Image 1: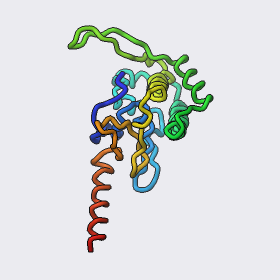
Image 2 (image 1 turned 90 degrees about the vertical axis):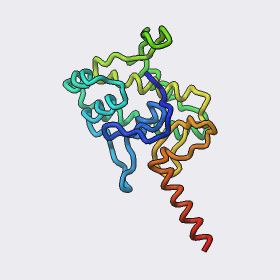
Image 3 (image 1 turned 60 degrees about the vertical axis):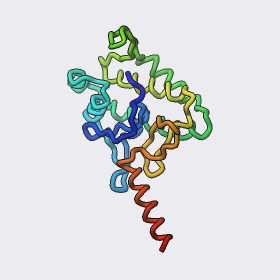
Image 4 (image 1 turned 45 degrees about the vertical axis):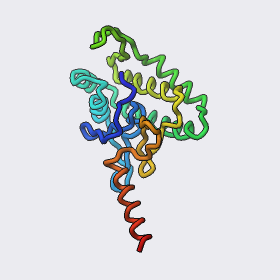
Length: 204
């Protein structure tokens, strides 16, 4: 399972944005502000499964299998985890500390729904990759809890940002580490246009 991508360009798949360069940050970004209002992109299990498929975490057959199960309340539990992590990430960015309850909850989730490791062939020979076995909808917690744990244990806290113009979060993988916007297409150009207009007004 890839933790990051390598670009800050706008990446939209099946109506979801993937510009956080980190799985759990992309998960946070499933409640963006559109037309001035928070917009819930994961209202039900169908939408949740669409997001996991768009994120490359589930195959189409796995989506079909999980979509036929009983756990329709899972979407609510995942949204609750998302908001807990949103609050914790914002606080952690300021203090570098985690609340004990969040640590315990992540450990519980990783114990109940662990990520697995398997061997695969790639162009360089033999490698390992993380994966999870999605036999029950609750197994969807596995990659999210793992990604959150990896994020909190990283030494790049200063690279984790909330966009200067909107509610979206991202991991700044730019060389200089000075990225301020979720993407140039969404907020970067908007800021540059606003700055240009301000300069024009001040020069008159």
